[in-house]
Length: 311
Image 1 (cartoon, rainbow, N blue to C red):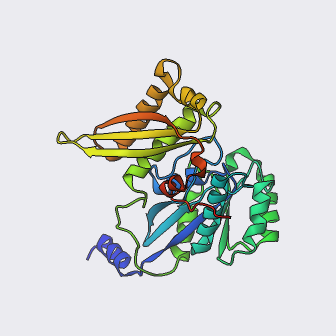
Image 2: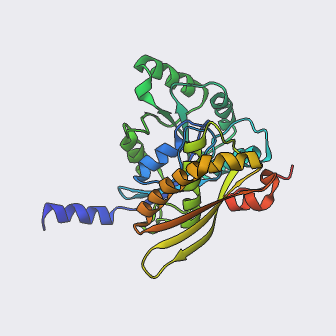
Image 3: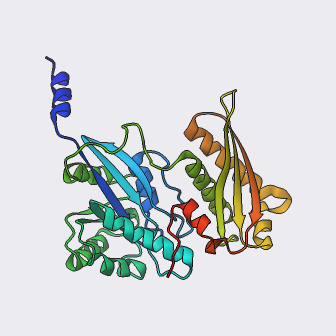
């Protein structure tokens, strides 16, 4: 028997590990970028606009003999609206349901503001925790060591990792640790699945990302995207109809842009990325509708995978 066959048999004989890892952190700490880096594909949307992630998105990663299910939670911040409250509740709920918590910190910002409040909140959560200092390429080594020391003095993290989610530096070390640390057990999902997000919802999230990237300085958070129709056509292409909901006519004008330029650019960028993911041609049709106070509509919260706050 060859050495290669021996290695393969050893891998088969080893017990499998699986579990859920919740990424907790302030808005724009880089959690979504990190999940995408781990998964090696687009799982969660990313933009420079804070609070982009609204509900828990699961990125499924096979590493060694382990299936690691990363739960990309909404950034935690001081809520002001019902949508804010639902997002923060979802994030903390995800933490309490996980096998392990990964506290992701923007190394540039350190333990200030929301990150400080989250650190205090984590003291009440009993799951094991690891600390991940992100964006290390932007911070001096001595400042990183000081930040790591400060955080570990306040909470007993099992391990501390220093990474760059953007370029992947240090990410394999995190995966190596998790593959051994998660409990033994069968895998939760098929081997080729990288997310539990339905394709209709992922397509809507991609369009919402393009909306943010194009109009982040002009369009407020009062926008939401839903995939209303999905038709698999005989020629192998997909026809998708999506609606962008805004709260006022003035926001609709911003989303459309002068002579429809904004909506055309958003549609083109979204269509290309959805087509790349599906590996088939896509015909995408976007519509912008005004729905006043959609942020107080329980049906919209259910569409986003959030519980409508009752308190």
